[in-house]
Structures are given as structure tokens and as C-alpha cells.
Length: 401
Image (cartoon, rainbow, N blue to C red; front, top):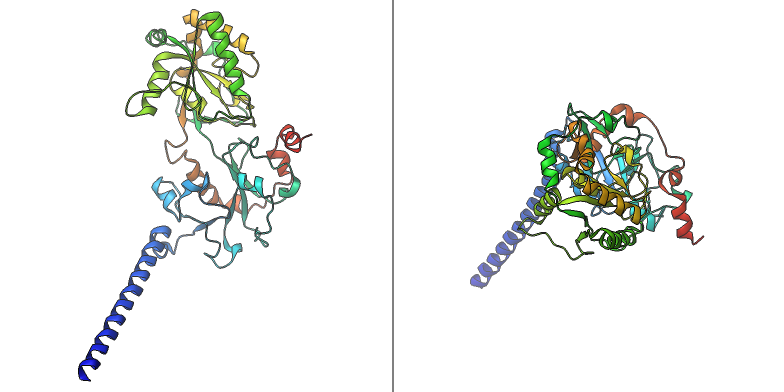
């Protein structure tokens, strides 16, 4: 009887200890998670925090690289790190307490103005439309989102917050663009390139290169490139080398990105910076890559390219037929001095990734925007959002008109 009593007691004691250990483990894990995600909230209780709620999926661009809590801003060494990112709608107990509620554009394309959206909003809140994707692929084509958003965060140069691929600096290392209005030097007023650089350019021996992995496009770039390839080969015995899933070429070396960039710089006269869709200001890393690795860009897109480059440093497939473009490319290859003039800009401007410094980083700049008290207090609303975002032609095609 006594033995049974002690046995039961030991079992109860063991069960109690095990249960306690589990509770402590769960609590410790939760505490560790909480403090990891929100970066020791209480340590900064005297700091004014800016809360950002990701209303749509946090796994989409640009949301996924914002990280959770303050981590994304701290890891980038942003000037402001007091912005707290979360997909948790219940974090503050009241949706009206969030400073910003963000919506991912492509998801709204599928379900505009869902019943699940917030019902009440505070006057100080900013509802933000965010998209790195082209409006050609994700048009709204409806007034349902008019008078709903306060800010936009997109590739458009007139967005409240910008998301893009490049920065342009002048010879004093001052950021000057891209912008809707640029004050470029005229090509003839730019200094000529050095003899040493001309020698580097003369070592090129291949006509053109295209890196492309999305073989289904809305811009017509694949069809244009195919025609260009035929013209180059048939008339001038020149080739267009295609790398990626849509071509047969591959870069060697253990670091394919680095080896590809080396090929561009050393081998190719021209680089096809063809966008997969047609939207205002939609210019991706393709153009930056050409400019950084000394290959004349050939552009195809719906952007006003003078917002990104001076006239005379690129060829425009939007205005040249494949036959005309092939002829121009051949002419420049045969005239090294004329080809070298396309690089005069390098004496006066430089092109950079927007991720090079915290001051230029788009995520850092978004948190900085939330710390601009004047802009936060200013009440704005985008009345005709669909007119701003959509190209009417794309909406007509979507409707089958």
C-alpha cells in the first residue's frame, strides 16, 4: 500500500515536472520568438514606433524582403529603424492603430475590394498600394479602388514611395535620377572617352546578347528578337546570342552571374534590354546591367527612356524595325569611333543599384517616409487610382473589346 502510494506520488511529481518543463519551453520559445521578431520592444519603449500592417500575403514582393518587426530596417543599417512590420492584424488590438496598411497590387488584381478588407480607418492612417509588377500584367480596370489608397509604392516615378532598380549620379556623386524631368548634358557637349577605353571597346567581337527566361511576354519582345536575329544573320553574318531558359547559351564558371557580366563587358557590342510588358516607367535591372557592363543597350518598353538615359547612348527598338535596327548595329560595329561616342556619358554620370547604400535603399526610404511627420499628417487620397495605374489599352484588351 505504502509502495503504491509512493509510486503514485512519483508519477504525479514526474507528470508535474514534465508539464512544467513543457510550459516553460513554450513560454521561452514564444518569448524568444517575440523578442526576435519585434527586436526587444520594451527596450525602445521611449521611441516612437511606426506600425506597418501587411494586409495581403507577406510572401510576395516587395513585402517578403521587409522581414518581420524591425529586422529588415536594422539589417540594412537604415537611418530610421523604428518601423515595425507585421502580417498580424490583431497585434495592436485595433486596426486603426496601425500607421500604414499595405496591399499587394497583383493580389488586388484578382480580387479588388474584397469583403475581407478593413471596414474602418483612422484619419492618420495611410493605405498603401504596393507593386513591383507591371500594370500591363496586373491592371485594375475598375473604379472600385478609386478614393481608397492614400499612397503608392511602385516603380512609377510619380509614386509616393519608389521601388526600382537603378540610381543615377552625376560627377559629384549626387543622386539626380531617374526622374520624370531630367536635365542631361547634350551628347556633343560631353567629353570624349579615353583612348584606353576605346581599345577596350575594340576588343569586343560579338554583336548582341539577350538574357531572358520568361518566354511568354505581353510586349512582343520574343517575336521582335526572332526577326532581329534573322536580319543580323542573313544580311551581316552577325549573331544574337540568347542566354537563359529561352535560349541555348550558358555562362561558364562557378559564379554564373559574375561570369555572365564579364562576357557582356568583354564580348558584346549590344545588350537587349527588352521588358516583358509595357507600362509607364517600367524599367528593370536589364537596362542597369547593360550600362554597368559597357554594352550599348537596345531598349523595348513603354517607358520614356529619357527619364533614365541621355539621348544618343542607346538604340530604341520601339521606333526602329528589326531590319533598321540590324543595319544600325552593323554600321556602329564597323565604325569604332561612332560606337565609342555612345559611352561619353561615363565621364559625367554613373549608374548604381538602389541597394548599394542605406540612403538609397527603397525599404529604408519607406521607413524614412513614415518618419516625415509633415507627410504623415497631410491627408491625401488618390481619387482616380485606376486612371493613374492602368493603361486604357490594356483594359480594353482584358475586356475583350
